[in-house]
Image 1 (cartoon, each protein chain N blue to C red):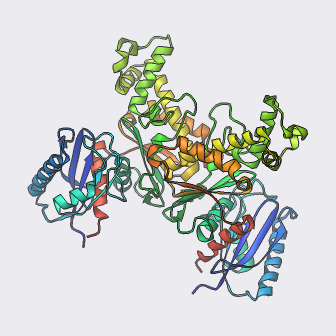
Image 2: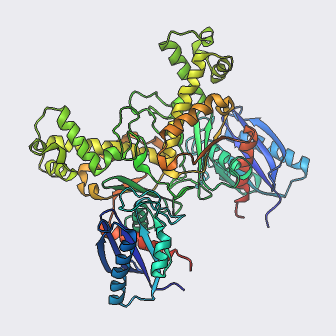
Image 3: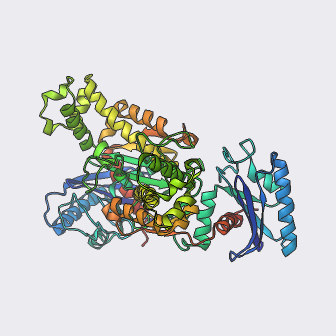
Length: 320
Length: 320
């Protein structure tokens, strides 16, 4: 029989958040440590172990943990290995599932962070009860978690769901962190929004509050603040961003015809500024047999909770 | 216990092929009728019933049929209805599964023709044993059948897998039969190849055997024959076609990271003429974490067999 708690760990390049979660999805204890502080992964795992043991003790959860789930960049569900962790301070590959299983004496499953968020959304959020949906995470990059027939899509190699890296501009596209050009991520991430702002300010001559800022340090938050204050150019930056994303979603529908797209992450906080152009471009571009079917909605979860809860759900999948 | 035979029916706009298939995938009897001959669907079903009964009698398969599977354009697996059958001579929607079940007294399941081909390939062809692959059918149009985790992807509404209608040219794309512009199908179908030939002949001035033909009646077969005879322009038409398809496949990999793409249909007979540019464009465009992983291969099935066998496999899924 399953033990009553699981541990969820959201491992990012800067911070690692973790929590103890019960079978109903309540986070009964949580905390975080600085990932970036440790130049040696053994020291990092030691601190993680110390801190998680501390909160387990505090709530009396020792020996009651069914499994540990971790969401981490480029984490492979099948192999348990982080194979190319660009944003982590340690050399890859990292056999993370094995390291954690041995250190804690508790079975551990890992998956990439966007997949963990999708699992969280399916279990506790806006996608509850859905068997077919696509989670799009708009953060520093663009990630995705795809659910088909009620199952996460991991693909043949464990790396499926890299929708931030479909090509949206075939010619003269922006360079992308992945080494290619024209990727969705280069346009629709928070950094993509900032790049669009710099391009618009450079090419165009119309007035904008954004001209008062140092172009090189403009963030998507600056663009949001300006748009909310009525700045026309800032609004057009969101139109541009949302249109590219809506066109891409229309193509994704031709692939798996989901019940919904769930938009998650920092840019999702922009509300109608981003949602309106997404929906308009989607409706205009989707094939007629799909028109009016898929919903495009925002995540219903707090970002921190989604990652911990999503990762923790993997803790129920472990086999002793 | 399952009965020993199934019936597979491949229903096209012009012809309908059908066969009786045993549990090992042998087509023990087959024949075809003209779909287009019947302006009334009841007459069509009557002839189908008469002809299938005749071949059942001939091989002693009466009362030994487990189920009937049909592959047909725009056929919905979930509802059993052909919802918008552009190439069929009868008004839609057509509740085909119900009609056939009643007429034959045998349970019937339907799906679209590309999905049926994918099921055939998975059961009897190049995708045997694969849990994750994508079938691309290059015929008059471009169809697809997507298998993930060993299951056909039908999507929320039963219409998933319309990869012929992802947008490959966002601006100034060719008009497509679906009413939109820039679809993969407008470039990489047999008709797409013929359109490319007309465009190339129109825009360019270099010599080509294709100039001896009436431009309006050029077919993909003409382009193939010219290319095989060493015609440079004809070869470039295949390069152009294969490049667009290879770029699209690279995007599909970012979605579901399949073990293989299986290329099927008339244009697949062009061999290296089409495969070389597909593979080159794929290798150039796929994200580095996926490089060198997915195979791109031709179907191992005869077209007629694939459709009948694929459809027939549905006959094992029926529940009494």
